[in-house]
Length: 362
Image 1 (cartoon, rainbow, N blue to C red):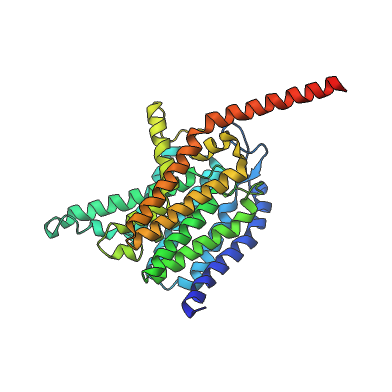
Image 2 (cartoon, rainbow, N blue to C red):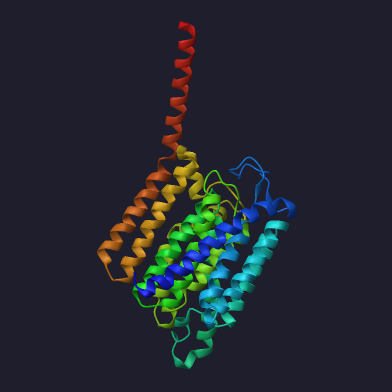
């Protein structure tokens, strides 16, 4: 093991251990401060009140690891400020149920703060030429804020099954971190290892059957931190790759978010309206159950992570082939829902008939 790998796995281990140690405390604290998720509608998959305070454990894990290993780096300090702001926004939402508009406004403010502190998708600035620098700066600001807010909400929206958001966040962070590593970007790699460690430290308590939910404070923190760190390092070069690679890795939550927007617009609903038509809900309806549904989505997310690595190395045929595999998997899962339900109903009827006949024989 090289010195560099030790320096990277150290932050990962610290984030994982601190988060794992802080999560039981979060479970104990949640009912005392009213941070409980009570299933009041059919959209909820769980049937009993659950602690919704896991974001605090994830936040502590990320902050401790970054403070120990990277607090002397200006960009990391900026990201720590942004993560703190988005965490408290999510925590207030968990406790008070903010309206979608207020929550969106808060996310924009958090994104604007770290843009001002220097975390930017910089290739936009010079895209319009030296004579249009002001227009380029405005475009850079808008694109950066949209990117940060979009990924924050994409991860937030997939937090619908036990362990789903934590697992996909860990997979995404590890894949983006690996791409940064093979291109010599040490700081983004370290930060992504920290995010992955915190997500995996929380996962044992959140995997089905969950003992605690991460809440909006956790899902928004993970989405925001991944989005912010992903535009470090490679963002300093004038290339759109900085957006494409994390977009590929986060392809699953991005696809689910876009489909949710299209679905709600088609129904003349607010895009903030909650429903049970997300990808993970539809796979559940196909009869796979929570554990298998989550594992299926882990696999698709992993495929998209490998796609990003191959793309970063210019292996066109290979990454296009894997994208086709991921698309086919999603198509099969979504298109087979109806047939699967019919099959399950038929099996249930057959079972009931057999039990009835067995009773008559007795």
